[in-house]
Image (cartoon, rainbow, N blue to C red; front, top):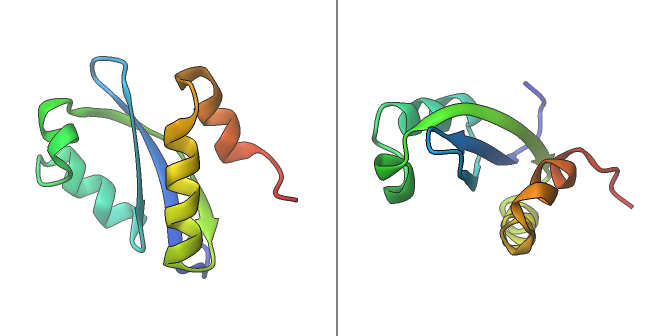
Length: 86
């Protein structure tokens, strides 16, 4: 894993919906979601897989990115994680 402090991540849930969140420990956070100890949403929509993650230098930047990805339609969320930053 990179030396970055914070991650924006995107999970595909078993019902096909997506969940976006931020963390400073990606592996532990995904495991919490998978074990039913994550967010309320993923407790009722169990995760199928981690779709991707993007590194940010601090929590504020990751929080802004989380807000931005949550504004996008579902079909544009994965592209948001992979696009080049200007």
